[in-house]
Length: 333
Length: 266
Ligand SMILES: Nc1ncnc2c1ncn2[C@@H]1O[C@H](COP(=O)(O)OP(=O)(O)OP(=O)(O)O)[C@@H](O)[C@H]1O
Ligand SMILES: [Mg+2]
Image (tube, rainbow over all chains, first blue to last red; front, side, top):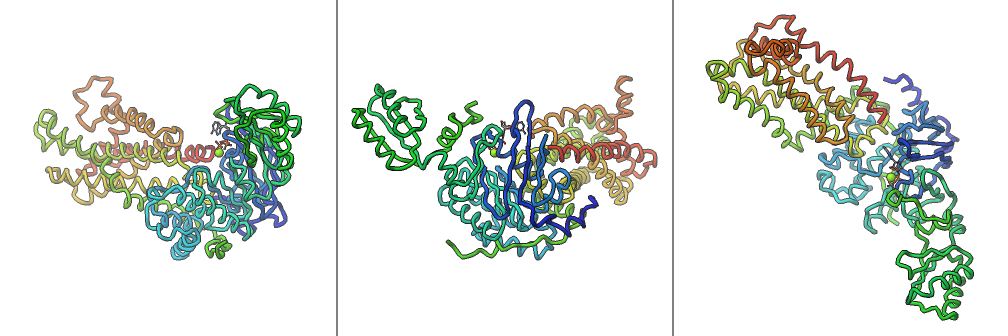
């Protein structure tokens, strides 16, 4: 057994003033793929921090390194003041992680899963049962606790999986795509839980592919692409970079497309994105008034419009605004 | 917004449990799995059961003169085969578990790193005991009689569990290395079939060609089978038992540390 045990128990958070996460130059390579290619991260305590990126951007890899599951190839990081490589066990004592894929035993009941984990943390029999029941109540799963996890719905699994990370209140909670695949109601529920956790002082680092999710939940957002951080800031700051919204215009015919694109570009001073089928254009608009003016200019020029709409920028569009190119999704690469 | 939820109140970490407590908790999980998935026993029992019935009734008369004599010869060896095949299933289960996020959860907990494997071993021991018990029971019904009586059977089962423990590491390592559970199974049986058949489990080696007899004589499975027969019959010598234990001891010494390394590197 590691000898440092008593020492780490006595000081679960080595330095109470240290930030929740401080990473410098983290690198992870798989063969010739740079999954994470040098990322710095500073996450203050008590914050909800989102990592936004497309498939294959390196979100999971980054999180797994910070949760001691994958050793970094280069760089250093401290989590709750503990060095990742020098004191991994102390890091484990201060974090919890709900991975991208369910980390539950499908054959056991929900309650058995939580009791099992509580016993591993060191709760006595009775205390483990009480802790499991309290979490089931909190996560509105009490009715399902005696059912085998394989009979849970996707949303129930996700909630149980997050509950499994809260047996002992972690200093930092890692949530890898906590709402992917959930319906809107289930997603709202998870969001509400995440907010409550943050209010109780837990630092939450979550990854997501949805700008809306990062926008709704996170105080700060880091955007990553191909293993690199390409932007970081509050949702407001990112939006200042990307415009408050996107104007989508569908032309009645494809002929005047170039003319329309040139007009929009001139009016809104932003690059115009063309959809593959050709008759659709999207462009960032800083304000609704500006968008309005641009539409008026198109009509005045005699461009036949079929439809136009303002939308919040999608992940694609954020990337487009930040990098001038589409995100390098794994599937697209 | 809903009322604050009681389960989300800050909950402190209890004093760190011992390695033994961690291991027992994983053992408890293995027992629970038995309760929830009793079907798994079917997989474990069918192969050795078919072997016992087929060999006894189809070949028994030809190989040993009578089915009764053959069963007397064959049964201790089929127990060795049973635990060896069981170990393949346990490697397969491990590979399946690793493919999901479950082991990531274990690895992100501040627990004794080998505890999950202790749980696997507890599961294995249960499997060996249940499968071995059923095969022995069927043998007794068919007329098998251990000359050494209950003490002989207990001693033989103790040896059997040690053998299962040793062989178990091979498949834990395969389970850690190979991502596809069915590949673990195919590979496992590919390795096991020759060592099980080129042994003294099914036939006396006297009729075999010299080169094969030389292999059978040093095949660990033969050494284990000889010791099992001896214990059940009350004729085992210390050296027979020691020879049977060589492979399990070596496998444990070499593969337990390797298991830990592979697991932590994943
Ligand atoms: N174990 C591994 N072996 C080899 N390559 C890997 C491994 N894990 C990740 N990769 C590669 O590293 C890159 C980043 O993967 P990662 O899973 O971190 O992305 P992600 O942002 O989490 O994507 P997603 O949104 O699909 O979950 C990808 O190109 C992926 O193929
Ligand atoms: Mg991922």
